Image (cartoon, rainbow, N blue to C red; front, side, top):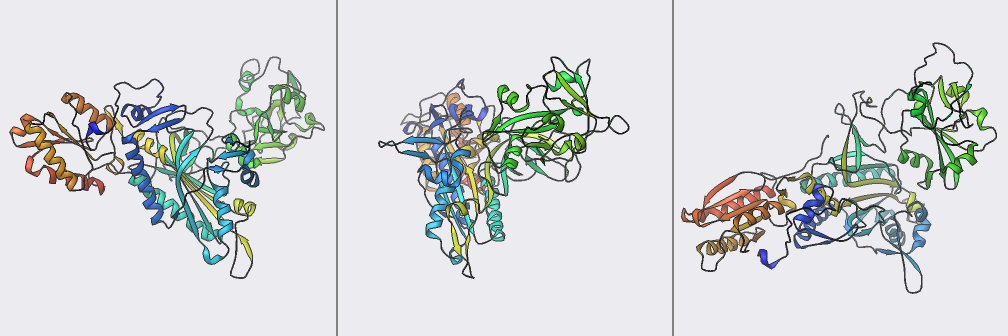
Length: 590
């Protein structure tokens, strides 16, 4: 391919809209262009790189025994209502209407569709196991699309769905997909780390996310360098002490009400004249869960993890109560709330408490009367708690629950997610089979997603320098950029470049010939910006010595005789393809 025959609109400066390096380089290198917020067009080089990621995904899915299908992006809302996700996932669903004003859903994922397909086509245990996958466009109504392809409204995803006869068989399907994901990201040149994760709206009993460490990532991961434990903070646990230490040295007196005029926050109570440490306070939050109020209690120095709360409640349909709703629930405004049994009276509101409060004594909480709090509260004696659960967000430095070493927290980009679904969808949507005994049973399912477009950008986020992208050979738009410094038809440099180009193409090397009439500096900067793994320079001076220059994008410069150039470049490319001399990923610890 000649440079002038394709479209590579490089930019010297990053557009103001691009907040992170990978988004800037996507635009500057001419890989994509923005149509609207969260919606992008792929240009020729970006599409070539995207197709390479897709090819790797397909090869590893096929190797793992999955079979490819293509499912509709336009889906009837009734199947989402049948699964129960029409409400729980409503915040991400795009809904469109046809000429008859019939509603449709644009697919953000395909659990419902594939389960109905399996229900219609799978009848016997002899047809199982099955694992279906597709690579297709998905749509999610992101309130705030940002970071380019990282959080887009329209994106390409590989989603796969396994169907098995038993939980044990489903665990084997899960393992195969987990291992396939490890290979996929390594082949893409990404260093990824699998971490325990919350199942979220998808549901299920087990899930892992594949994370790319990056300071610009939107996820936070807690990990232990001692034993290798790693989990998304939405799932992470620690061995932080469960109960605040007692300070009174003896039994706690009965709760005592005291005035706290103007106190509205945990921090207000830590200041004089009160001086009550946050760890000795009980934080009371009011949430509206599917139209009903629920109280959530934590230690004053802890933060609620809403993903953990959603998992325990079994729904994502909840929100913080408004001040008016809080007053209607407890008879007081935020800042004076509590769950001491005597202050709740006959108020029928469920109370959830974080495990760190269990056994705590001599605590302070709101009196459910504006301007008053209660001290000397003994949780076991005085609070009304209906449910105990781990609801807090872990903090860096807390001891690992497995080995006791300090936890660390860092940011990361999620590129893949695997779920063990169980029978959640198969029972609701009728995906059953007749077992060996003639009994009809629901299929045990798993689902497995890779953000293909997000993976492409994650490669750039991890593989770049001050000059531009450093593509791994496996996903580079072209493996070699051939750069003649003169392009006049009668120039010896141009004739040598054409001969070398033909030889490389014959050898099966993906090469782009920079035939632009530009200064050498412009060509070199563009090649580095786009990130071609190898650049071959041909100029009058080097050609007069019978040599050409081979420049590795992530390495040094070497000169070789013109007659040996094609063989040398081909050898370097093949070594890089095999993982020797090029960027390759791995999976391990943070």
